[in-house]
Length: 371
Ligand SMILES: NC(=O)c1ccc[n+]([C@@H]2O[C@H](COP(=O)([O-])OP(=O)(O)OC[C@H]3O[C@@H](n4cnc5c(N)ncnc54)[C@H](OP(=O)(O)O)[C@@H]3O)[C@@H](O)[C@H]2O)c1
Image (cartoon, rainbow, N blue to C red):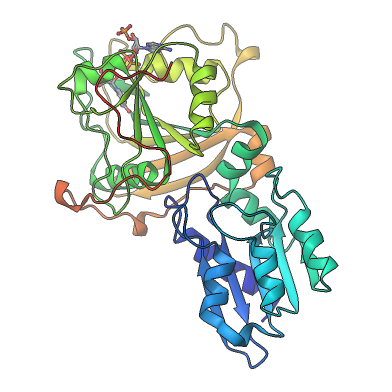
């Protein structure tokens, strides 16, 4: 196989397990045996085998003399599973092609060193840009200790998020809602303001698509019988919240508003990725709620500038993704983009399933706080 094509296949395999591996990265591995047979593997939920181990198990003795393409540097430390670098060596893999190095301090080049020391031919950097985009939440978490922050808002084309009476359901249609639920399924936690809980009483679970419910975090307090319960209630600085979520192994957090919370995250520069679901709806006046509450840039010279990284039609709506210009350049395209085709518009509550994939527990008692 050609290196780029094999690595693209590994990236695809990794995409299939997105949202199920936190706090571990979602990694893909492709192994081609000397006789041409191809085997694949992706990271299993925490405690389960890593991508390389899954592909090696599938290939069995055919791994001897093979080439392996793996999106992230194989680990070199024993955690809940044995080191993948050792497994590749023991299986007799001749050549390992790695997408990007793992910044996790427990790996950080040690996996590559171990392979080379054992005489395995190693190449690094194939499809690196695409993999940095795919793994952006993981990479940010391992480098900064904080999760990747996605701010999601459903907005009218005239830039409003709720009517003057507070009602905001539903600005967008079924396809946009299904896509937003996929974003939830890819997130380990959801943050929402106490006023949104009071006004909308959202359940913030994953419906319309297959996926696990994220940890729910309310800024402020939620009533004991609020549908968001069980939720963590947080009081304090948002930077502290992100530090705490990072410590819990949250790789991606989705902020779902309202305008007060959105404005606070935005003005503090804490958002990595803005996802606007824009509907051809107009409130038609300045009394409807804006996207961001609070005072914004006082003059045009101080406006926040970013780059569109994706525009996707979703039914009658649009999904528009925006990132800070510097970040968009660094990561290329989006880590979570999905086409309209991928979004289903099912509406039943019954299709939600599963328990949290991450090792931290979402089990919390009503009223429990993390600060
Ligand atoms: N279109 C959309 O996508 C969308 C999404 C979500 C919500 N909405 C709409 O937005 C409206 C609500 O927005 P909103 O701006 O009024 O309120 P909000 O942003 O939902 O919540 C603000 C409240 O959260 C609490 N809070 C925020 N930061 C905190 C912190 N760091 N520590 C402790 N507590 C904190 C405070 O609660 P206390 O007041 O209790 O102190 C604050 O008043 C609703 O009408 C809802 O329908 C629209």
